[in-house]
Amino acid sequence: MNCYEHSIQPAVAQCPDCGKGLCTECASAYSLPICNRCNKKRINAEKGGIIKELLLTYGVGILLGVLFARWTNAGHSYPIIYTIISYVIPIYIFSGIIPGWKTLTRITPAVFLFLPLIGWVLYFVIKFCLSICLGLIMLPIRTVRNIHRLITLQKIKV
Image (tube, rainbow, N blue to C red):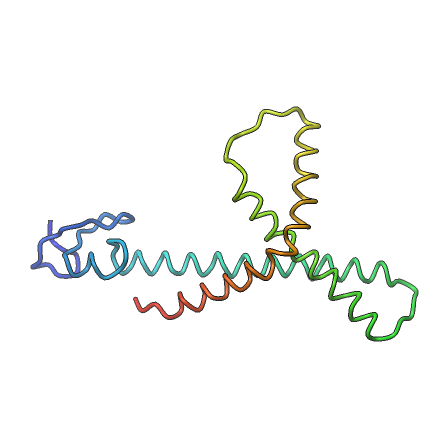
């Protein structure tokens, strides 16, 4: 088998995604032997996943935070600084749910638990409450990490 891009060169590796042959030059272009097209697909998929996570995180946070703030401020007139704070804090708290949930999912074992229905309800209620608490810490960490990764992916030339 020869390299798909350099047809004269013999293949020394194979792309794990599409199975095309890769010569020494193509196989050493990235940290793992992968063809340009598949690497671009992986980069685009990772970018899409990061953007989706950020939109979901802040979309849920803004939606729930604004609803909560409007519900708690209904019928009252407060100074502007209180109104701003009453919107910002719930948005931050509710935005932390998804990063907290993902962090808990990542650190818990991937073993399927056999629980009765009430056990599953308790499991998800406890996980939800813990994800709110953990999300307060993980929201800025995951946001900075995701933005840094997006910048890094933008710099990769394929």
